[in-house]
Length: 247
Image (cartoon, rainbow, N blue to C red; front, side, top):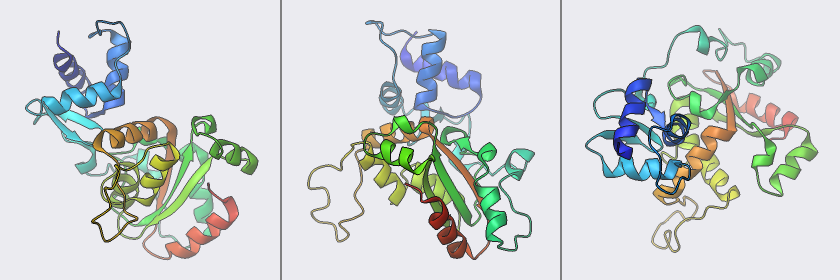
């Protein structure tokens, strides 16, 4: 069996779009496809093979689906099941204490790889934690240890949580400040001289392969929670940042 056949089989069995890391993990677990040198399949290999077989696979950054066989998570309608209920503040009074409790409830946080189909296209606030602070390089892991928490970022989405938090900040669509910062913290750099002819010298981008690696790292290491809030986000965000001091 070829690698692309094995990838197609994993996706068909799953019935859902999957990240390149998830596909690699599943192939390593089942042993359906094995490399000649016996080493493990990695996400970058899945990325390269699915890119070369665009007639078989649809791709959205690190998310892969069978061509015409399933909808990528980024364009699914948010589910209205009880799974998302915990993220919504019904008829909010913009009570900072109430919003604090809802947003920072650790039981509501999910791994970044599991949220694509859940994030609503509604305004609100979001918080990003790291599962294990040791996954960060120095001095960032030591700094979180000093602060006594695992909170990396608290932000607002004035129009759409799915567009701002999910697509820009976690999936490298557009110019997400958090995504760029996270990539830099992990040691990735934009291509040399890539901003030479650009008016805005701050909106640097990584190579496509590096974006895939950063997204895979985010999917495996970051935990996310959000609340919907139609307006008044700045007051709540400022209060939460002062209280928690995210990294």
